[in-house]
Image (cartoon, rainbow, N blue to C red; front, side, top):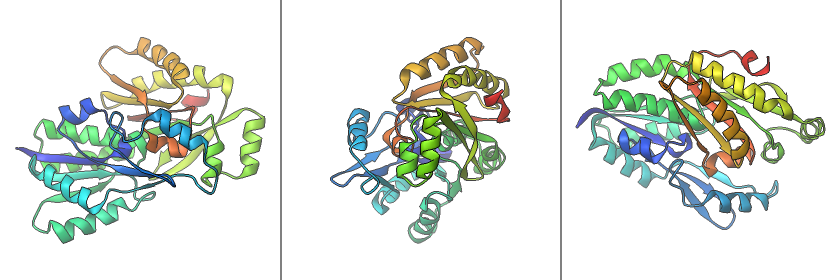
Length: 296
């Protein structure tokens, strides 16, 4: 048994390989359409395929968009009990508390159901792979049998350095979900502008816009900057239904990679697609950043 076991949620988009290698417990989030509910645990394990998900999503309008929900009490109970067989104490790293009630709910659940157990709920202040990369960072330390205090101290200093940066090419789902108005959608679509968003202190903020023809060359440059400035040897790069463009960017970044940094590349799970729709791209890493790296 290790000193610490790590728990996280399906929003983080960890791969099965990561989950198995570092013995991570993952709790599923749910996607609810009008006619069905599907659980999602990560990149590789979901109850709905990406093809089926995007087909269903395309048929939705503003009134019947799918929504997401946090793990059930039974899933929290099962997950924490499983984690307590792996470690003497548990750290659970979840989606930003600014965007979900999972952290508050989990703290109350632990107080009520595990009053004598050493379980800490840690708000990642992140979404998607920002959650995942922090959970992976903590899991590597747990794998090395670091103490709980050591891991929490590192998390406190590292979560502020997580950079999750998105480029949206399909604004329809930002509009349908109420994140932008019709006028902004029309303006951006008419002039071929693609918003660049990033996470800051738990909320999504705008960094600027890119013309479509600029996305590939600018993200190639940005990827090189990530390799130069990451403080963790893992980087996440994902897309939604955009493999051709993403592959071209990935190849250019890998050409700059000395081999010491692992670039985890994949299509994000359907939990991400609800909010981004198809044709989005994003990076997550731990380190310094300057938004001008994307635009200059």
